[in-house]
Length: 125
Length: 107
Image (cartoon, rainbow over all chains, first blue to last red; front, side, top):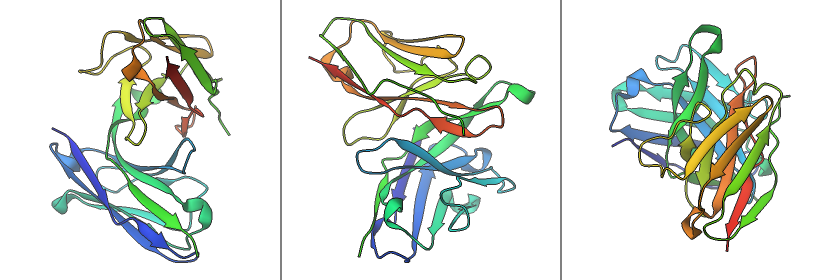
């Protein structure tokens, strides 16, 4: 059974830093791209960042570029998100999500097939 | 930037058919996907590649697409289907986008 368990959320002051972790089990972690997706209170889903299976390809949403860093440790089956220079608008539940792909070549398309339960990050003074 | 547009809310009575739409310019060339999110829970994939159901998803959930519009249909909606539903897709550059979400009320 695929399991994704996030941790590391909490209350942090504006300008502060936080590191989120996601522990994966039930699948071959090193074979899958992984993502962070967030959801502000009462709002919709927002993709934050993606990392390929070998960390060769990394992508960020414009809203977090330059402040957040995604990484992974395949030996520990773990995904991370280092969040610096946090702002009030970063307040959200952060979900770890596994990637799957459909199509081939130019039609290849990524989507999220499994999600963790999320960890809440609150940025407030 | 690319947008997927959903109605904010849909309401049906138990046993009726609920239809939730999602419009986007890239949908003729990119698959839509649908996620169900019940209150306080993580999203769950209910439809992928336009119309396929993951294992464990009831048959009453189906998906279709025509031109720039995708539709999630719940045939014979049940009270336990009450949730927020999000469509998801990518644009021509591979950028990942969610629709704004639709709150489905079944009462």
